[in-house]
Length: 419
Image (tube, rainbow, N blue to C red; front, top):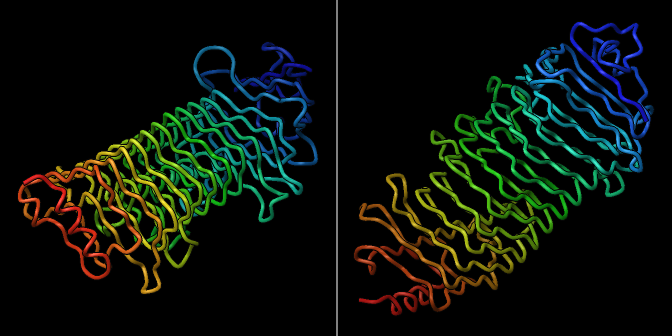
């Protein structure tokens, strides 16, 4: 167990074991073989050109943590070459990265992370990422597991990170047992030209094929504003995840107004997942449960005690949903861009909804002529609008649009509205 130091005016020929004998380059550090328990510190306020890469052959142990951090005043900055990550790790795990600023020049590859962790064969475990600022990358922080369960990244913590002006802020793929807290992802958008790699561009956070992920006390604002016509445009997308929990998060101003696409937060083909006490303001869609032909059905998901207001659609249920609970929320479509408090949409004629329980919510609209409390172009079959929902707005009897199956359900809801 030892301490090693880097400073921009150091000497790679020195031993690196004190501030006075600090190394100079990340290239030298990449060739170094730290041992479990070692601490690597970069001098605060310095700028380091280049990248750090550690692979499975030389670094890491889940039983002995290695720390990469800073010392002195200020935060060290890492500036890699164009189209290159700043920090890349592919090893067994047991690493903490903290107190670093990463500034990239990535415009062509949407899945190239500033801090990029990719699983080795057999998986990677025990990764901690704290107090990182990243901008100018395909993803500010990208944690990427492999294509089979054995090769996933497990036990990941991401805290107090500031991820902005990337194509995507935070990207977690094929991961398990993840805790994300106090992360601020804003103004992440496609950075390159339209002809480039635009898959899933413009998300504050993209979480895919993951199990047991908690995102808490975090903000996802103004992402996906100019993403062209591609996936993304969201504050946070959870794609085909199981047991994902969003708690006390803010989603504000996300989505592409030109193409009319985007979400504050969306569970896309997820199962057994929850949103609780979240706030969605001024997005294209506020909070969504979503299925289309690219993903399986949404199964047993919940939205509880959330507030959505000023979104084009505050609550959206799209496609096949098999089991959902929506309760204790306020959907307040009262802003100038608001159109629908509650939107139920079909993707194909084969869409099947079942056991969707909607109760104890407030649905409210303002006085604009184009606003609807509820729109269900394909009907409401499978949606139970149970007692104790409140429907508020001027001329409430004229602001439902329901066609097809389930029209009797809305008639029952209307009968419960005070005159």
